[in-house]
Image (cartoon, rainbow, N blue to C red; front, top):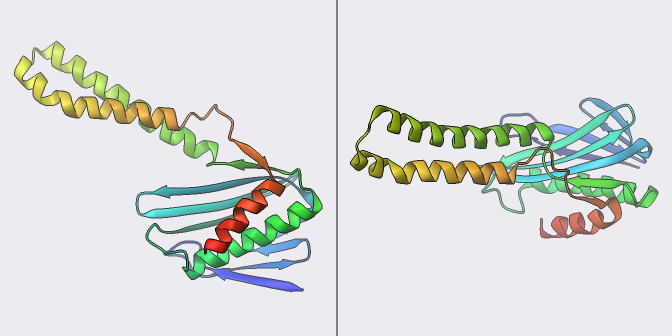
Length: 190
């Protein structure tokens, strides 16, 4: 029996259809044989006014991503959110039944982690650069005091972003069997 899941992956994109028939997932970029999946990655992040979720399936010869980017204020009953979550839950159930030990890494891709890590380093470098420039140009102590709070804020922000996005750190991982229960509880809330 074929199940069809239709949702808009992003506010400015059209509706995308995904079909799940047995162990075959058909999406906009072709077919994915679920029996060949060897690893998963799940990302669920809030960025400003956006809520981003993604299930990435890796097999020996391909990677398939099912992503959803909606407004952060979208409620649990948002039709795109519920359909995306239902598709991901269906896939995870199939994979857990065929091989409960498939690893699921939890977090964003390394590229996104490197980008945010570099943003943090730039913030730290800018804070130190401002202090060095003020000392080198002979800025009065009154002006340094006035600039101290924003510079310390920039420095603290940079350290926080660097600590939260260490790209060399491996992502936490669980088995698909354990991840299935977490995802099903999320699906029940939707």
